[in-house]
Image 1 (cartoon, helix red, strand yellow):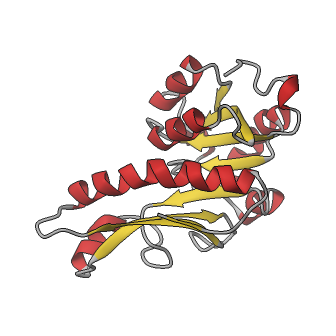
Image 2: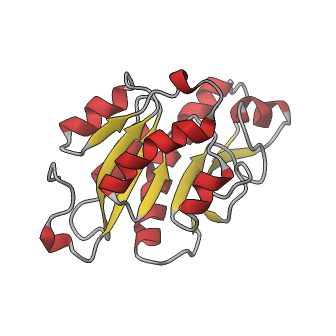
Length: 207
């Protein structure tokens, strides 16, 4: 990956900014997939935590990184988002992929990127939006759990579904053991959806 993002020979390729908050395992899966004949290339990895381990991992792959610490903004989400915009204006992404980004975005910000922002959520939406998805699936006695990639809309975890992967809930599963199996599927599902989405195809992917 070129440190300056897509090369001139990639003129027809979409550019992707990935938002992270932590180690960025889904980010790595996306970055590693965007090579060869993939219809997209990464242009930025952005975090709300300057200490996020994923930033160094992205930098090591030659991808531009930026961080805006959300904490000084208190609860002012709009002010935090305004601080993100210079980085996004410079990178000019065609697509934004939220990959473990643990901040709720305002409707105004989401609307600005309507139809161009993806998120991965660790449940089979519309079941279990929000947090603690694996514990909720186990508590409900579900036979299956999984993950969903969806378009981001102003309402939390409720945009059009672009892909889902399923795993069985096993006897004796803990939220941690279930989360680990779901995460393996996330690393397959998100790249598959992004490839299709970047090519202009919104047909859902089911693994």
